[in-house]
Structure formats: structure tokens, C-alpha cells
Length: 347
Image 1 (cartoon, rainbow, N blue to C red):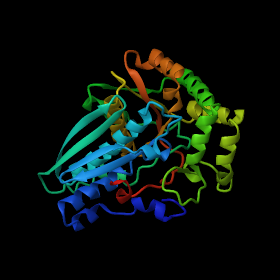
Image 2: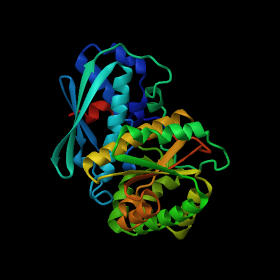
Image 3: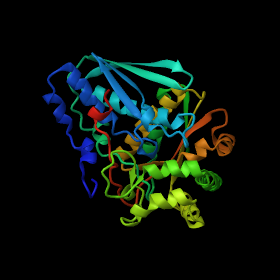
Image 4: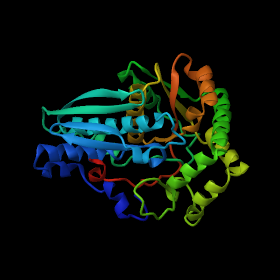
């Protein structure tokens, strides 16, 4: 729960049982979008829009929230959309809908997702269903507990999730030697990304003061920045790359305070592969959250191609790396980030 609850956090303020107050089929399907918009996204940009036509939802990117400097190929955008799609499908399953998903290719970097809903059963009302985890999931950028053992059954359950997609592979790394090599790679990729002026200017637009009225972006308390410094940070990011101290802190966090690295990769490099990667991560992060584990994506090592090649050489081999994240038990909780409400992204 955010310490400064504002209207821009109201997308989180509903209950699952509110579905049963919906009177029409269209209203019920629109209610499912409430879960979709709580998905993680790069910079918390929420680059999605939904169109409802009878028993169908058409989901695609919103050009107004594209990250044109840090995500030029739209990989992160479609991964974010894939995570939103997975939330939507999890909610539909809980409420007794059978769904059919089709990717409609507009051009090489444009895809619309068509989801058809058919009500076949009553709501499951299962307390263990992942729908409950959607409402409490956060992206936790804090340190993780390196000394706390993770149950092997939980790791096995998480590792098996990508088997839903034949084109997706998943590597979990906790070998110290491999982690050391990947830590150096991630730090170098992040430093190189932050040297780019256009990249920093775009990022600065999404770094927000802790107390903000914006529904898009990352408030200071969600990225571990002190309250008053959060007002100054966007300006500092625009002006110059961060000091070397920040690279050392990232190095320490990755090497000493992250039990597991996760890498999702795919057989291809199309929008469909990116959507499936997002769906897979969406399911992984909810499963992790359900068992008390946290996740924290890091995109620079994927988007900076020279460093992506290192991931492929050292870990993923014949698969193309698409998504990198930290995994572990957090040392402290992280608040929710603000959100656009379902009615604001339904066109």
C-alpha cells in the first residue's frame, strides 16, 4: 500500500467480488481489464490499450506511451502487453470464461491481440487461484536475502512455467561464477545505456517524486529513493550519467543481494515471441509473489545488443535472450506503483 494514496492509485482499490455486481456481459468483460492493467511494464509506462466489441477484447500498444529511445524495436512494449494479457486470462479463468487468443499481425513490429470470451462455468472462488496474487504483486527493487534458502519445489514450479510455450526457454542462474560474469555484464550494459543523453531524458520523464499525481511512471518510493531526493532525481538524470558509486551499488546488489538471476529467451525475435515472453514472465512473477518471492526486471542487458550476445553465449545458447530479472526473498516490502484505470485504457 502506498503511503500517499492518491486517485492515481485507485486502480488497485477494488475487490474480486465486485465482479458479481456487474449487470451486463460487456460490463463483466470490462471488469477483467481491471486485472490486466495491474501487470508490470517497462518504466511503468503501461503501453497498452483495449477495445471491447461484444464478447471480444482487442489489445494492442498505445503509441502515446511508447519508449522510443530505450525500446526502439518495441520488444519491452510487447513483453509488457504480454504480461497484461496473462493477467487478463488468469482473471477470465477464475470467473469461468473459456478464452481463445489470436495474434493479428499488422506489420513486422505491430500486432493486435484478439481475445474471445465464452462463459462456460461459474466463478471458481478458489483462494489459491493466482487472481488473488495480481492484487498484491509489486516490482521489488530492494535487496534480496542471499542467505535464505528457497524451497527447491518452488524453484521447480517456476522453472516449469515456460513449458506452456514451445518457443520460450527459461534459465535460472545461481552458480556463483556464472553470476559474477553476468553481474559484470549487467553493470557495463547499464553504464553504457545511461551514457546516452536521449535515453536519460526519456527515463527522467518516468522517474517521479514519491508523492505524485501521475498515473504513469515510477515514484521515488518504488525505486528506493529518499522522499526529498525523489524531487531532484529526474533533473540529475537529465543532466549527466549517474556517479560511479551507483554502478558499485548495482554490482553489490546483483552479486551479494540476489540469490537467482532469471533469463527468458525464445526461438525467434518477433512480436509473437515477445508477447509470449511477457505472458511467461507475468505467470512467473505471480507464482513467485504467491510464495513470498520478489522479481525485478533489468532491461539494459537485453536492449544493448553487444551485452545480449554475451547472455546468449554464456547462458541461452541457441535461444535469443528476451528478458532478464532478479529473483529472491526481499529484505523489505515495496509499495504499489500508480496505474491508469481500466476505463482510461479502454478505447
